[in-house]
Structures are given as structure tokens and as C-alpha cells.
Length: 390
Image 1 (tube, one colour):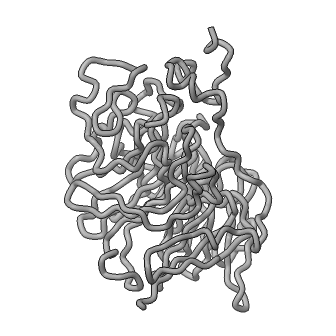
Image 2 (cartoon, one colour; image 1 turned 90 degrees about the vertical axis):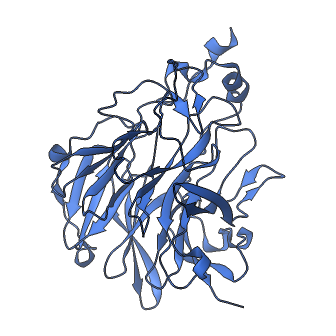
Image 3 (tube, one colour; image 1 turned 30 degrees about the vertical axis):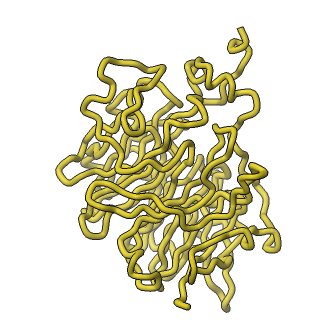
């Protein structure tokens, strides 16, 4: 039997390639590698980027390979986490130029970074560090204060590169991904969003049945938590589509379907149970097949037109488990109650005719002046989006 000859990617369970759609895909598909080298300024795909009228993209910084997540200190330092290279970068302004420094290295997928009260928190799978007064210690951050034991995070690497942020309640929200592509998980350990006190005590589960969210933010008005969620692989080109979800007020701990129910009510073909979608909180919007939505931020600035106020910007990292590529862009989600409408915003990095991509938007970050930063993991760059009325 042909399927017996196929090897699953690392971390995938044996069930991942057991259906016909998966076997048709498997021959030519593999995750896109992240280049570990610097992309020179002249090779950055700035000329490919397309934006609505009045918006402009420029290179904010480059020379930080694999940079994904972004956080900003009170003095303007941009911190960047990585997934594959084990680094945390610091980007500063000096004499009108931006300098990139490898702040930390040798960590296991330190994607989870956030700054609060002058301290940089770094989450690398199950290890948690706090670096106090970090912007005054960029040349020598020291070993930091390790909080690993108090947070008690699972050690599995698969889908456990972190996204973290502080909520309106002052608590630290932490993603715990599933430890497989598609399998039954321990609902007390995997496939969830948690929150903690700053010292790692008082853990609560905010959302369950979440396959892999690596981006969330709070609506500026309602203060409700919204999060992207990456759907399962090896179930065909059409999806199930990735999701944008909301944790409604008073619904903390709700179940979002994984692994039994996907998208707007599609039972999983491999992990089956009766009435698979009963009691599942369905998404506010679908974000496309294998689009890999990562960073999400609600816009609260004054630079962009008023029509973008309280709109969520979502970086879609782009597909790999799909024969015709999809995503590689930034979209906006216009919220209407518990629903959302997805619209294009930053496009051009995917050439649909040649099925080639030129960059992978990963996270978004709003600056104090109202401009928007977009990180590009493939090119190790950050683009700054500005607006000027014509």
C-alpha cells in the first residue's frame, strides 16, 4: 500500500496521512524552511507589496533572520522572538539608524515575548524568564530570573512555540498548542489558552479545544479576547479553513472544537465522536484554507483613516499544506458584534500565477505614532505601514 511508504513530518501522528486527500498532497508538500541568513536590503520585496490608496510601506529594519513576534519597550526598543533560530533580537535607534542586536540565543523556540513595567518576559516552550530593566541592559541582559517551575508548562515542542501577552486584567495570557496535527489531547494540558498572575500562580484556562493559536488581542471597546487558530493539515487543499475566534464576556473556558469539529461545523474525518460539533463555540470568521493566521492587533491609532479604528489586523503567514499557495498577506477583520468580515489589506507577496511567495508576514505591532509594523520571517525584515491622505 502506498501510504505505508510515506513518512510523516516530525511531530505528526500516524493518523495524519491516512486519508486519500492527504496521500494526494503528500508527494510534493513540506513545510517552508526559514532561511537562517540575512536578506540584503536590496533584495527585500518592498516593490511587491500592494496597499490601499494612501498607504505606504517602507523598510523599518532588516538583518534579523527568523524574526517573528514583536514587543516594544517604553524607550522604543523593538524586541523580536524567533521560532527556529533560538534567538531574541533587540532593535534600537542610534544616530538616526536602526541597529539590530542578538539579545539572547541558544533558547528553544523563544517565540513568546512581552514587555511589562520595564521587564522583558521570554517564554521558550516550557521555560519562562524575566529580564528586569531590560532596556538599560541591552549589552548584557544577564541570566534573568527563571520562573519555569511556577508556570509548569508542558515540555512537548510540537505546536508549543508560545504567543503571550498581558490582558486588560493585568494577567499574563499564554498559548498551549496541541501536541499533534490531529489527535485527542488531554484538555487539561494541551489545546488551550491560559492566564496567570505575573509570578506564575493562579492559572486559569480561558479557552479549550484550540489547535494552535499564536496570536491574540483584546477588543479596545468590549475588552473581549480574539484569537487566530490554525486548522489541521493533511485533510485536503480546501481546509478545514483557519479561524478567527472570540472569547465572549462570561464565556471563559468555552470549547472551540479541536480535535472533533472544525471551521463552521465540520466534523473531523479521522477523530470521530457522535454529535462532534454539539456545544462547540464556532468561529467569528474563517480566515482561509491553511492561511496560517499568526499575529493579530486591534488598531487604536490616529494615523489611519477612521474606518480602521478598532479593526483587527491579521498577519497570514501563508500555506504549506496546500498545492496552490494561499495567504502570505495581511488582512483586516471588521468586527460586528460576535462576527467579523475579512478584507484584504497588504497583498503582493504571493504570485498566484507562478505559485511562488516572496515573504511571510508573521506579526503586527502598532507604534505610538499610529503606524503599523509587519514582521516578515522569511526575509528577516520589518515593514512600516504609514498613511497620508491624498
